[in-house]
Length: 165
Image (cartoon, rainbow, N blue to C red; front, side, top):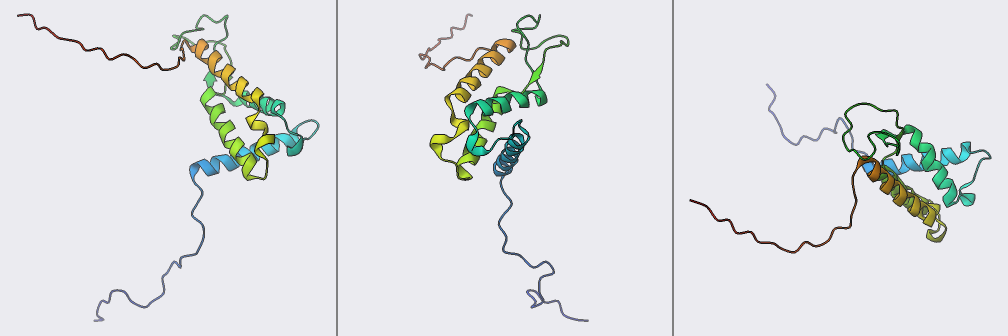
């Protein structure tokens, strides 16, 4: 019988390679979003280059993405407009949720600069894009009956409990 040895000199069955760790979920999403946007520009009629892209083209892209949205946004004429939990289905459109659009713009803004774009020409940082996101947030909140208000510091209130015997 052969003795059991620990730490033998045999080579590893799986040699380790000096490769970079896999990208984070954020980095993977950012790369996928960037490639999607570049594909959108190539398919645009007429095709656009990144240097000719403006905030208006970013808004077109965001509106194009609405067709793939999963958030039901009630129109003002819908019976469920302003209700957060409708009791039955309606024909209102599905759109991209405000939070998804906001995150997407943040990733694309970073990807633009990482791919050689200058911050002062970044179309994802355009004023029109910020205004659009603010309007989407407000309209989706109204459609769901949720009000977004700036958080104010509440005065501390102490309550005294009197037990009645």
